[in-house]
Amino acid sequence: MLTANELKRYQRQLKIFGKEGQEKLKAAKVFIGGLGGLGSAASICLASAGIGQIRIVDKDYIDLSNLNRQILYRNDDVGKVKAKQAKAELEKINPNVNVEAIPKMLNDNNVCELIGDCNIIVDAMDNFRTRHLLNKAALLKKIPLVHGAVNGFYGQVTTIVPGKTACLKCIFPQSLPNLIWPIISVTCGIVGCIQATEVIKYIIGIGNLLENKLLMLDGLSMSIEEITIKRNPLCKECSCVEGEFVEGKSV
Image 1 (cartoon, rainbow, N blue to C red):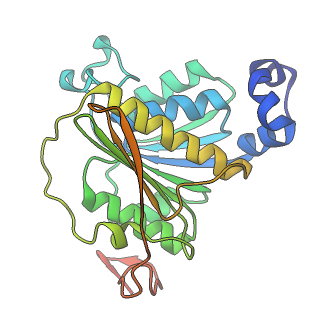
Image 2: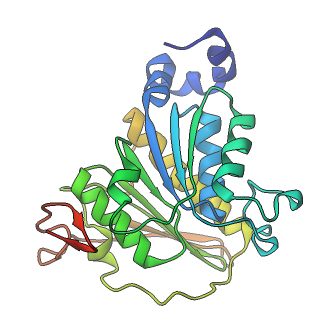
């Protein structure tokens, strides 16, 4: 049930989806993997919107080179643990939100446990190996995964719904090499905000999600297009998902 404080705080968005929609947001549990540029933008939007519980996972420390795009952090935060500082900042933005910070590296052995009982996953990672771990966990848990990625002025977003859409392995079967990609804050902001929009729509049950669609943003030409994607019937991930992660393998 919404408090008087929450009714006042969210009065503008209550005009969009009413008390029932806001109560759904308050009851939701969202997992955010990665607290860099995408995770910063997405988490700020979700906390501001009143997501009840947000679980954030990132093992890294804040570096000076992060500050051009990771808008959760300030110059004085350099050297601090990202997850813990992100929690502090998000709770300043909205003290009604319960933020759980986990400063750990996602791996085969802990990803399902860390996601726990969250309703939806935000993929804000910076490498495809970990993205594929989140994809597999989403399939095993049968919860949606909102994928986002950026490269310079280019960005992409899709929403994966297990059993209904192509999974991340269908779209990107191979992990790209781990490189230091060029990144600017504006692209992270746009893509992260779109990811947060998908999460909010899914939780409330309004609008159309980016299901079997890859939204592609080109900031230089200021163009957005959608590519239709199809599930691969031979995909080793989503065609038959059973068991749990054990020592880096699924059984």
